[in-house]
Length: 312
Image (cartoon, one colour):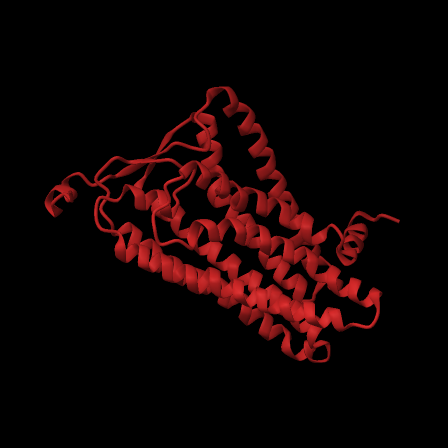
C-alpha cells in the first residue's frame, strides 16, 4: 500500500546505506588490497596510453584518437565507482547522502552511455578502414572524429540528466539500504515507495536507444567487415584485417554481455548479488583489461612505447 504524499514527505530518506561488495570480515581486507591495486593499475595503464597517443605523431590517427577518448573515459569511469567499493571494503556498510548518491548515479550513467557510443564509433572507424579504405581519409577526417567524440560525451550527459532526474524525483520512505557498492539504478528503484512506471519507461527507452542502438551499429559494422574479410584473396590480408578488429570485438562482447543483462530490462532486478558480480565486470574488469586488450598485439603502440623508454 502506498503512503500518502504528506507522510512520504515527512519520512523522505536523506541518506542511504551502501552494503558494499562484501560484508564478510574475513575477506574484506584481502579484497581491499586487491581492488586498490587494480584501481591504481587501471589509472596507470590508461594514463600511459593517453601519454603515448599525445606524444607520438605516429599515433595521431582516428583509431588512436578514439582509444585516447576511451582511456580518458575509463579513468573517470573507474574513479566514480571504485572509491565507493574501497570505502565499503575498508569500513563495511557506510552512509552516503542522498545528494552524493544522485551525483554518483549521474556521472555513472553519463559515462556508461558515453562508452557505448564510443564503442560504436570505433566499430564504424574499423568498418570504414577495411570496407572503404580509399574513402577513409575523407570519411574519418579529424573534424568527423571530433564530432563523433563530442556527440558521445554530450549524448551521455543528456541521457543521464533525464534518467537521474526521474530517479531523484521518486520518494524514498525507507528502508534505505542499498545492496550494492555504489548508487545504481536497479537498487534505487527497489527502494522507492512510489510508482516507478515512468522511471522504468525512461530507463527502458534509454536502454533501447543507447545500448541496443549502439550495439546494432557495432554488429552491423562487424558483419560488413566479416563479409569483406572473407572476400579477400590472401590469407595474410585476411589475418591482418581481422587482427585490427579482434581486440575491439572482444571489448564489445565483454562490455555488452554484462551491461545489457542488467540495463535492458524494464522490471526490477531481484538477484542483487548477481547484479553486484556483473557490476564488477564492467566497472572494474573492463577498464583494467581494455588497455591490455587494445595494445597487447598493437605494433604501433609497442613502437611508441619503445621510443619512450629508449629501448633498442
